[in-house]
Picture 1 (cartoon, rainbow over the protein chains, first blue to last red):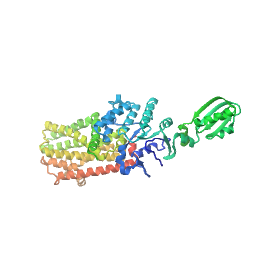
Picture 2 (cartoon, chains in turn cyan, red):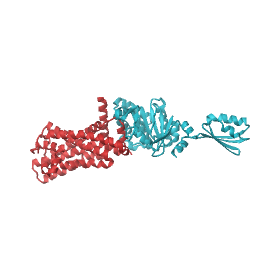
Picture 3 (cartoon, helix red, strand yellow):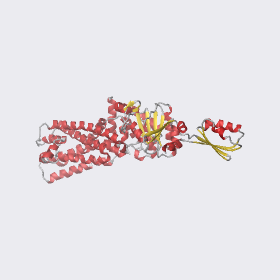
Length: 284
Length: 264
């Protein structure tokens, strides 16, 4: 695997079950020692700067587990102490995180009493306790109700907004990756299959978007096919389906040529490909 | 290395062990029920057997020491076991903390709980069996307690090594390992009655020397000279070895993926 994530990026790691996503995050967080190769985290090597790296990164996992008898506040206090944070700073930071993640009402509830969604919020709060420069999120919304997942996604986007924090996120949820991540990397069997922006990956796979048109007149097939960015044209009677790299860029020219050819349009539908299509293509 | 940060990290483990302990009824049994049941059983047996004051002293020093060591070593083991049982062990090892913070923090809680057990049983000894633990004096008692607490830390750390090497299967060692050690170091009998090989093994256990040191004040001659120095020498050597082995075990657990499996 050869992967380099720039500072300040919100980077997604996608792949089927067993692809090695969690293994990758575990290696980056020094929970797992790689059998070969070098891993630089924040430009440093764990073998020589482990202590420093540990204090500048943190990890939140899906299916969060913490000390069962400790309350939400106590769990956060405990993990803050592990980072050597002073009492006053701990108190301020915990209060901020309780508000940020809507955990205030659960501050005195024991971990064992929390719902799955609240546990996940605690996991995210714990991962932010040392204000990490590199935040590793391992399937942060797995198993959550859609509304809670939506809120968590919003929080992740907010955390990245100022650009000072690098976020590496693994997910199965393609919509989540497409919404949140500027760049994504597909891995399978521990190997990077593709890396880039969602748009670049769609282009690489020639997935693009589909424009379906119901028309009247003589369809200028060859003329449309010659437009840059058009992958293919299928015409069947008064219907046609045009596959393009990006409908936003290609539609004006297509419509212009259809108008020039005297074709009248009765109906037009656009179907965008998403990362799910890319995922399926790479997972094959 | 900042002293304040070091203290905060050590306090984290004191906080964790103490809070988990006070919220679990089982741990209350550990410091009250089992030690008192064991103490009363042995004390009453000594009364029934009409043992003389010296023999009674020998037996009571043994049972009180055993209970104290057991509770203290459990706390050191708990520093990992609470995380293993919570499936949260990885969060601790992501943070910039060292084995020294874990062992020191948990040992302080162990000393507090072990100290409670010792005080309760010391009071019970005086009230029920007319046996005074303060005869050797404050300093001798303090040195003896320090010795048994360090012995407990040594065993607890070894349990942590086993957990990091063999995973959940090794947690039974938290309750069984110390019993094996107590069998050899002469809790209820002098090590001189053990067969040669067992007596030789007993000499490698620091608790043997601390028991002999304390019993000397009640008229029992130790089997060797400088027992206190030998006790502290061996226990400190074992603790250094524990830290070294724990680092190796942790390194191995990261290589084999055991650390992750313990979190699943």
